Image (cartoon, rainbow, N blue to C red; front, side, top):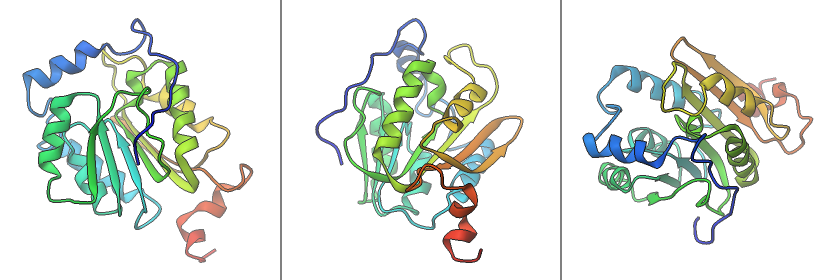
Length: 221
Protein backbone atom coordinates (compact mmCIF):
# COMPACT_ATOMS: atom_id res chain seq x y z
CA UNK A 1 0.00 0.00 0.00
CA UNK A 2 2.95 2.30 0.39
CA UNK A 3 6.27 2.81 -1.27
CA UNK A 4 6.77 5.72 -3.64
CA UNK A 5 5.32 9.02 -2.46
CA UNK A 6 3.07 11.60 -4.03
CA UNK A 7 4.31 15.16 -3.88
CA UNK A 8 2.09 18.07 -2.88
CA UNK A 9 2.56 21.75 -2.29
CA UNK A 10 4.42 22.36 1.01
CA UNK A 11 2.72 23.45 4.18
CA UNK A 12 2.95 27.12 5.01
CA UNK A 13 4.44 27.32 8.48
CA UNK A 14 2.56 30.55 9.17
CA UNK A 15 -0.88 29.16 8.33
CA UNK A 16 -0.70 25.48 9.30
CA UNK A 17 -0.33 24.09 12.80
CA UNK A 18 3.44 24.02 13.51
CA UNK A 19 5.35 20.77 14.05
CA UNK A 20 6.31 21.85 17.57
CA UNK A 21 2.66 21.68 18.67
CA UNK A 22 2.45 17.93 18.03
CA UNK A 23 5.87 17.21 19.50
CA UNK A 24 4.91 19.07 22.68
CA UNK A 25 1.58 17.28 23.03
CA UNK A 26 3.09 13.80 22.82
CA UNK A 27 6.04 14.71 25.01
CA UNK A 28 3.75 15.72 27.85
CA UNK A 29 1.32 12.74 27.85
CA UNK A 30 1.06 9.23 26.39
CA UNK A 31 -2.48 9.96 25.17
CA UNK A 32 -2.62 13.77 24.87
CA UNK A 33 -6.38 14.03 24.25
CA UNK A 34 -7.35 11.08 26.49
CA UNK A 35 -8.81 9.33 23.45
CA UNK A 36 -8.96 6.00 25.25
CA UNK A 37 -10.52 7.32 28.45
CA UNK A 38 -13.12 9.99 27.70
CA UNK A 39 -16.74 9.01 27.17
CA UNK A 40 -16.99 11.87 24.68
CA UNK A 41 -14.39 10.17 22.46
CA UNK A 42 -15.85 6.68 22.92
CA UNK A 43 -19.31 7.88 21.89
CA UNK A 44 -17.98 9.91 18.95
CA UNK A 45 -16.00 6.92 17.69
CA UNK A 46 -19.06 4.68 18.00
CA UNK A 47 -21.05 7.16 15.91
CA UNK A 48 -18.17 7.35 13.42
CA UNK A 49 -18.05 3.63 12.68
CA UNK A 50 -21.87 3.38 12.77
CA UNK A 51 -22.04 6.00 10.00
CA UNK A 52 -19.99 3.88 7.58
CA UNK A 53 -22.36 2.80 4.80
CA UNK A 54 -20.71 -0.58 4.14
CA UNK A 55 -20.41 -3.42 6.66
CA UNK A 56 -16.87 -4.34 5.53
CA UNK A 57 -14.20 -2.53 3.53
CA UNK A 58 -11.43 -4.08 1.48
CA UNK A 59 -8.69 -1.57 2.26
CA UNK A 60 -8.85 1.50 4.50
CA UNK A 61 -6.54 4.42 5.20
CA UNK A 62 -6.59 6.49 8.39
CA UNK A 63 -4.05 9.33 8.44
CA UNK A 64 -3.56 11.11 11.73
CA UNK A 65 -4.37 8.00 13.76
CA UNK A 66 -2.78 9.31 16.99
CA UNK A 67 -2.52 6.45 19.52
CA UNK A 68 -4.80 4.15 17.52
CA UNK A 69 -8.07 4.16 19.48
CA UNK A 70 -10.33 4.73 16.48
CA UNK A 71 -8.05 2.47 14.45
CA UNK A 72 -8.99 -0.46 16.68
CA UNK A 73 -12.67 0.04 15.86
CA UNK A 74 -11.99 0.48 12.15
CA UNK A 75 -9.95 -2.74 12.19
CA UNK A 76 -13.15 -4.70 12.84
CA UNK A 77 -14.71 -3.25 9.67
CA UNK A 78 -11.74 -3.59 7.29
CA UNK A 79 -9.78 -6.46 5.77
CA UNK A 80 -6.71 -4.19 5.61
CA UNK A 81 -6.04 -0.91 7.38
CA UNK A 82 -3.14 1.48 6.97
CA UNK A 83 -2.98 3.95 9.87
CA UNK A 84 -0.39 6.68 10.12
CA UNK A 85 0.69 9.65 12.20
CA UNK A 86 3.30 12.36 11.91
CA UNK A 87 4.61 11.85 15.47
CA UNK A 88 6.86 8.84 16.02
CA UNK A 89 5.74 8.54 19.64
CA UNK A 90 2.12 8.28 18.51
CA UNK A 91 3.09 5.63 15.95
CA UNK A 92 4.84 3.53 18.59
CA UNK A 93 1.86 3.72 20.96
CA UNK A 94 -0.58 2.89 18.17
CA UNK A 95 1.52 -0.11 17.15
CA UNK A 96 1.39 -1.46 20.69
CA UNK A 97 -2.35 -0.92 20.92
CA UNK A 98 -2.99 -2.61 17.55
CA UNK A 99 -0.43 -5.41 17.84
CA UNK A 100 -3.17 -8.06 17.98
CA UNK A 101 -4.49 -7.02 14.56
CA UNK A 102 -2.16 -8.51 11.90
CA UNK A 103 -4.13 -6.86 9.08
CA UNK A 104 -3.36 -3.37 10.44
CA UNK A 105 -0.18 -1.47 9.59
CA UNK A 106 0.88 1.68 11.43
CA UNK A 107 3.43 3.91 9.74
CA UNK A 108 5.15 7.22 10.31
CA UNK A 109 3.98 9.66 7.62
CA UNK A 110 4.00 13.43 7.31
CA UNK A 111 1.19 14.78 5.16
CA UNK A 112 0.80 15.82 2.45
CA UNK A 113 4.31 14.75 1.48
CA UNK A 114 3.94 11.09 2.39
CA UNK A 115 0.45 10.33 1.11
CA UNK A 116 0.56 6.66 -0.01
CA UNK A 117 0.12 5.52 -3.59
CA UNK A 118 -2.29 2.69 -2.78
CA UNK A 119 -6.00 2.51 -3.63
CA UNK A 120 -8.58 2.40 -0.87
CA UNK A 121 -12.33 1.97 -0.59
CA UNK A 122 -12.38 3.82 2.75
CA UNK A 123 -10.46 6.90 3.90
CA UNK A 124 -11.14 8.35 7.36
CA UNK A 125 -10.05 11.92 8.10
CA UNK A 126 -10.79 12.21 11.81
CA UNK A 127 -9.69 15.36 13.66
CA UNK A 128 -7.10 16.09 11.00
CA UNK A 129 -7.91 18.68 8.35
CA UNK A 130 -8.25 21.66 10.70
CA UNK A 131 -4.47 21.53 11.18
CA UNK A 132 -3.98 22.57 7.53
CA UNK A 133 -4.76 25.80 5.73
CA UNK A 134 -7.31 25.84 2.91
CA UNK A 135 -4.85 25.29 -0.01
CA UNK A 136 -3.20 22.31 1.66
CA UNK A 137 -6.60 21.04 2.74
CA UNK A 138 -7.66 21.15 -0.92
CA UNK A 139 -4.56 19.16 -1.87
CA UNK A 140 -5.36 16.54 0.75
CA UNK A 141 -8.95 16.22 -0.45
CA UNK A 142 -7.71 15.82 -4.02
CA UNK A 143 -5.29 13.11 -2.90
CA UNK A 144 -8.10 11.35 -1.06
CA UNK A 145 -10.33 11.44 -4.14
CA UNK A 146 -7.50 10.14 -6.35
CA UNK A 147 -6.88 7.30 -3.89
CA UNK A 148 -10.53 6.30 -3.49
CA UNK A 149 -11.86 3.49 -5.63
CA UNK A 150 -15.12 4.25 -7.46
CA UNK A 151 -17.87 3.90 -4.89
CA UNK A 152 -15.38 4.41 -2.06
CA UNK A 153 -16.22 6.19 1.18
CA UNK A 154 -14.59 9.33 2.59
CA UNK A 155 -15.56 10.04 6.20
CA UNK A 156 -14.72 13.30 7.98
CA UNK A 157 -15.26 14.18 11.63
CA UNK A 158 -13.94 17.31 13.38
CA UNK A 159 -14.25 19.17 16.70
CA UNK A 160 -16.29 22.37 16.32
CA UNK A 161 -14.97 24.50 19.19
CA UNK A 162 -12.25 27.07 18.59
CA UNK A 163 -8.68 25.95 19.30
CA UNK A 164 -5.87 28.49 19.05
CA UNK A 165 -3.46 25.97 17.52
CA UNK A 166 -5.84 24.93 14.73
CA UNK A 167 -5.39 26.54 11.32
CA UNK A 168 -9.14 26.39 10.54
CA UNK A 169 -12.48 25.51 12.05
CA UNK A 170 -14.63 22.43 11.45
CA UNK A 171 -17.27 24.35 9.48
CA UNK A 172 -14.76 25.55 6.90
CA UNK A 173 -13.15 22.12 6.64
CA UNK A 174 -16.45 20.30 6.04
CA UNK A 175 -17.80 22.97 3.70
CA UNK A 176 -14.69 22.55 1.55
CA UNK A 177 -15.11 18.76 1.45
CA UNK A 178 -18.81 18.90 0.61
CA UNK A 179 -18.04 21.23 -2.30
CA UNK A 180 -15.56 18.86 -3.95
CA UNK A 181 -16.94 18.10 -7.44
CA UNK A 182 -15.97 14.40 -7.33
CA UNK A 183 -17.76 13.65 -4.05
CA UNK A 184 -21.41 13.14 -3.17
CA UNK A 185 -22.63 13.61 0.41
CA UNK A 186 -24.70 10.65 1.65
CA UNK A 187 -24.86 11.30 5.41
CA UNK A 188 -24.24 14.11 7.88
CA UNK A 189 -24.37 14.38 11.64
CA UNK A 190 -24.18 17.68 13.50
CA UNK A 191 -23.75 18.24 17.22
CA UNK A 192 -22.64 21.28 19.22
CA UNK A 193 -19.24 19.60 19.64
CA UNK A 194 -18.45 18.02 16.28
CA UNK A 195 -19.40 17.60 12.62
CA UNK A 196 -19.47 14.27 10.81
CA UNK A 197 -19.86 13.87 7.04
CA UNK A 198 -19.91 10.75 4.89
CA UNK A 199 -19.11 11.32 1.22
CA UNK A 200 -18.82 8.86 -1.64
CA UNK A 201 -16.82 9.00 -4.85
CA UNK A 202 -19.40 7.66 -7.33
CA UNK A 203 -18.69 5.98 -10.66
CA UNK A 204 -20.28 9.06 -12.28
CA UNK A 205 -20.08 12.57 -10.78
CA UNK A 206 -23.76 13.23 -11.49
CA UNK A 207 -24.96 10.23 -9.47
CA UNK A 208 -27.65 11.39 -7.00
CA UNK A 209 -27.19 10.66 -3.31
CA UNK A 210 -30.35 8.52 -3.33
CA UNK A 211 -28.58 6.01 -5.57
CA UNK A 212 -25.73 5.73 -3.05
CA UNK A 213 -27.72 5.23 0.15
CA UNK A 214 -27.43 2.10 2.28
CA UNK A 215 -30.95 1.07 1.33
CA UNK A 216 -30.18 1.55 -2.38
CA UNK A 217 -26.98 -0.49 -2.09
CA UNK A 218 -29.02 -3.34 -0.61
CA UNK A 219 -31.68 -3.09 -3.30
CA UNK A 220 -34.42 -1.84 -0.99
CA UNK A 221 -35.25 1.26 -3.06
